Image (cartoon, rainbow, N blue to C red; front, side, top):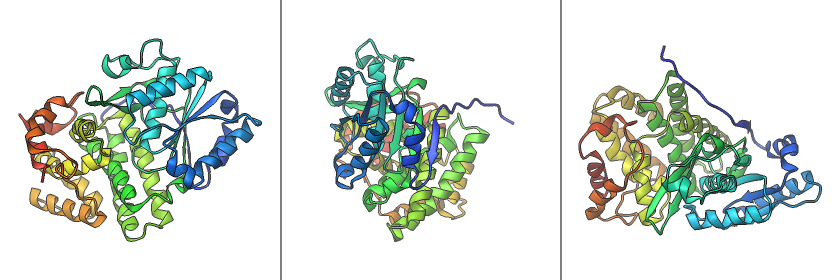
Length: 381
């Protein structure tokens, strides 16, 4: 059997209506000066953020947490720098990310900046890793998608440089993850399906990855099967709480693979799309996936066929059958996307391919000459 290393530094609390008990259990950690990083607006409206802040205030015996809610759907470098300054001004020692992937990524980036003597840009552009001085991070997701609560990455955009890139390192793994599906109950259907597709992307890409292990493939297989069924159930009934719990669980365990195996080409290729259009991460993935799967089939036939079977329940023996099964699946979810809809023009394909950064060798199809430009071009329509 293949040998592998596994790193899981995060304490996890999972379950419906478990968030209060989880915070109480971590009260010793919460006695320190706390900042809550969040996108805020819908969480205020739904009453989630006030309830969490009230509970933290009780635990801290009347001392309120600092709230920083100036975070965009794609967290921007300027927002992170402002958050770092507020955290330093308030001598923050614990950072809580409460919200979707953007809030958790922003919390990680702010925490990394607190523990850094150099400018935050050195983490994004110079390859510097977050230091051991990074304060503890608590991640509380309110969507089921990113798996950021169990990963060591934080994706940040710099509109000034026209790039979307990541801060990565062991010191921004959350110390605590509180995954309570109750916070996802009111997420609209379109966001539910988009973020849910990100779960599928994490599982599929880590499944075909050159770094995949016996352990990680087991997680990928479980996630594809659970997430595929849960999303189809939610497409039929958005109030299906059982399906909400299942997709939250799938999103969480997929995060284990993010930290230990990583993703493949679609994730790397989405970052330039997001930087150019300020559209959601999952929307870009959905646009890229049909073309990527078509090309991937030539390099990882058995894994692609098995992945599609786990996701959709359809047995496929040809590339055409794989494409058809996948098309029916995304059509059922109502999440069909293309790059033109996101604001990308056909003539941008070559330039986008040049902007892809990071290690793409994790993907079997990456050895094909010009593959990224091909995928971008085919994803236009």
